[in-house]
Length: 172
Image (tube, rainbow, N blue to C red; front, top):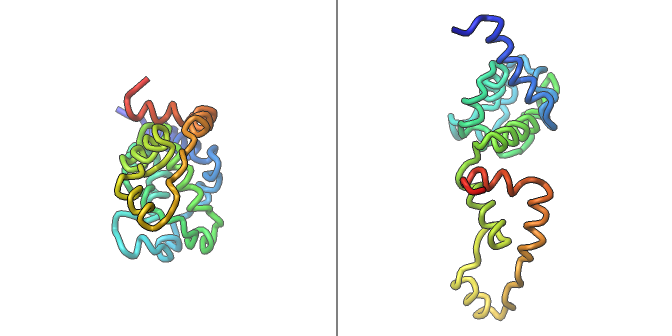
């Protein structure tokens, strides 16, 4: 059984974690007015994303729901919400902080993992198909140069990105 004080600590823990991340510093300024949701183009076309709802869940300490859900990945980063927020909550930046926490926690959507895997293995997010190579020749374009995989791997290793990706893929 969770005591009320323990529940408060858990909630403050997640919002504190967000607040101490680059981009998440302003999350606790939100008082849930709804201006962000009213100005969000994504929220207008799908019920799956509502910036106010994401912030609310985060402030309530719903770490697992926020990080494992799809909502944080639907933000288009248009900054409409951020420009209109009366409390100066940097909502799009909070979403970036949440995405970073999600990635570090192993909650990366498969499409991003596939992009990262391609980048680490071939130096490109999308592999170049034989069809594309043939079309380049047909159009008189030169063959594509090597992507410099070793330089990319060095950058990914230096930033620690390779460890996050390998953790996601289940390899050492």
